[in-house]
Amino acid sequence: EIVLTQSPGTLSLSPGERATLSCRASQTVSSDYLAWYQQKPGQAPRLLIYGASSRATGIPDRFSGSGSGTDFTLTISRLEPEDLAVYFCQQYARSPRTFGQGTKVEIK
Amino acid sequence: EVQLVESGGGVVRPGGSLRLSCAASGSTFADHGMSWVRQVPGKGLEWVSGITWSGDSTDYADSVKGRFTISRDNAKKSLYLQMNSLRAEDTALYYCARGFNYGPFADWGQGTLVTVSS
Image (cartoon, rainbow over all chains, first blue to last red; front, side):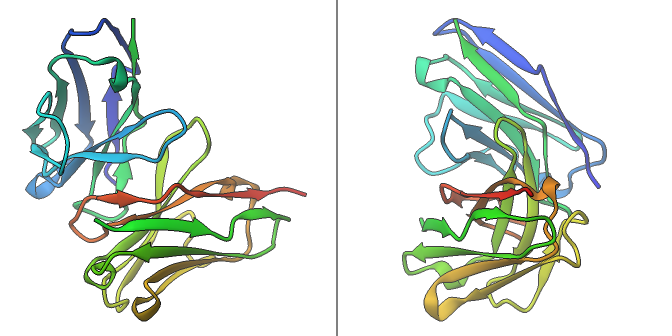
């Protein structure tokens, strides 16, 4: 099983600041089958990024993904108040499809 | 995009059974693999099971293997999860999601809550 470890656990930033979220895999994620999801309070998760760096339909360009192999990053270039959420990474290269434990982004 | 609506959750005693359903709207349901993902409220996400677009291949998390069965009816645009021998640790919000083999989970329903308690 590929274990995904996200850091930090919580990120507290002001609007307009840059947020950098990390996802580290215990094994290489082949073909960069790595996705990022946003889950706002009381809502279902929403796909943000797939293939490590491709934005899903309708996702603002302030969200970007990068990385390969075992180290991946989600960057929110300029935080907006509505970005308050928990962000999960997920690998879909190998069974079981595993998720990271999440990073909570708080807005100061 | 596919809209997904789950149903069938509820309270069940340990050892009991429950069948979840997921109704899809949109013309592309039959083109996609589908999955069930669960989440204990306030906790992380756990992939439970997935099925290919045709239904000819399925996969399960070890935690539910042998107890849960995933199936689909493309004519009815529906996904199912038969859950048997339920345990307290199966208590969670269950989401259906579009995606399975080598694909992200692009669309999600709002979830249906399963509570296993005596």
